Image 1 (cartoon, rainbow, N blue to C red):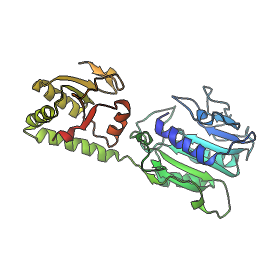
Image 2: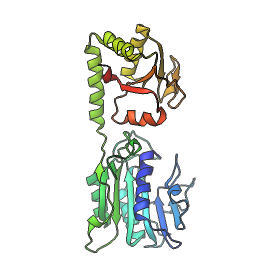
Image 3: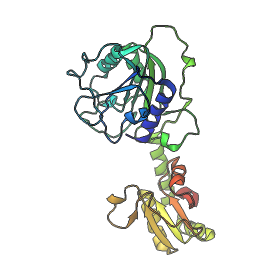
Image 4: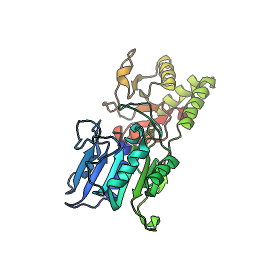
Length: 316
């Protein structure tokens, strides 16, 4: 379970779920794979039921038929949630109808699925969702959609953990009602923080091209390092730009140079530090970030608080 999905579901629980011994929550697709939403209800008195199609951790109920949950009483749940499951469901229009049937009148549902991610079968991987796709499902199911967002966030200043470049979470909050209600009265995400995957890759290759075309790059990098007085240099990210930067620094012979990479175990040809390992954060140390992601520096500030950090384009 990636962090951004957990944060969004936590937001829904905080703003919509009212606790009580008679309150019931159904989690559709509850099988615990690297984390589950049940932990969000720790300390609550309500009844949590985890639904999935096979036995496993955090599964309380397995329907005999995948798209007909007749064993569960209709209109018996106050809240129904589903996160990171709808992309794996072959016929989601049938699932949304079952969610509608099992939800009480006036009850709320929250469904979250990725907008983009690599193929991952559990056991199938069928869909990615945009706002219109989720709204279409809600309409087909009979719901009123309160809010549908792609990478929605409650505030522009929330932590980088809300952004998951591999998933770009799409989330909708629904209510089961036939009444004409004021949708503006309900809590909503204030803005979106969509990850423009294609744009980010274009930006990376732009800087890679800029690096290659800068004929005096050795002089500029050497001048930058010497002017700052750095003797311990950490290159974060051993991708295409990181490799070029590391090789250049080795040629200049201007201090100790080490690589930090989140995929350290996959790099066999030289020693690499894992993210979070202890490093020298003294005044004569710096970190050069070769991964040109928008919020990465802010994220690294939580792991390496003292060391100076620069994106590679800042060297120019």
